[in-house]
Length: 236
Ligand code: VGL
Ligand code: ZN
Image (tube, rainbow, N blue to C red; front, top):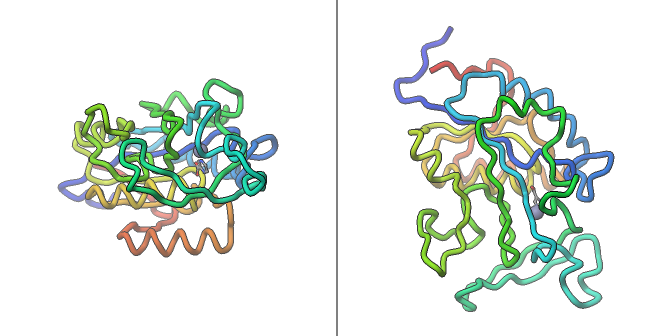
């Protein structure tokens, strides 16, 4: 048993392990997405201080669905659009559009049934505001301060507050997809000051070659550590 660091209170973050992101029936199936479940379940059996799962949880009129945008340029499976901040039109960013996925309360939005859900302490739903995509489990894409709750704030995730209240120091991340929500969550986690790990057997990419590589590059650049299950220990 190795010595746990003095200041070590680890959280497990299981990102979007939902039917729509997995074969055989998911509307936005990540190749081999289901194959991460044994790793995720193994991690769920370890003594993390808190185990949180997120769900992508979109209303039917969500801005990230290509079908909600007029024009032939948006008929393609994945296309690009400009998203404008709901309260500040000078702030915009370009993002991809997707087939409808993870619509609230539909079968596709459910966590995989083979996931050991009884070991998950809390579920946090994200992407609930139809005006905003939300890849990161921490913040909206405009990176607003997560604790503001005035009427112009679009930050809706309870995760930053939860981790702060629990005194978490380290965050271990798995889930789907490596090149979208896992990547955005990991980069935000590091940005928020958590020592952040992505466990590579516990994630799969929409684009397993170029997407995976680019996501690893950007996560490493943000200070995220990419680790394997071998020797994984979270004693504290
Ligand atoms: C995701 C695309 C759209 C993800 C969510 O969970 O990685 N990707 N919405
Ligand atoms: Zn989504």
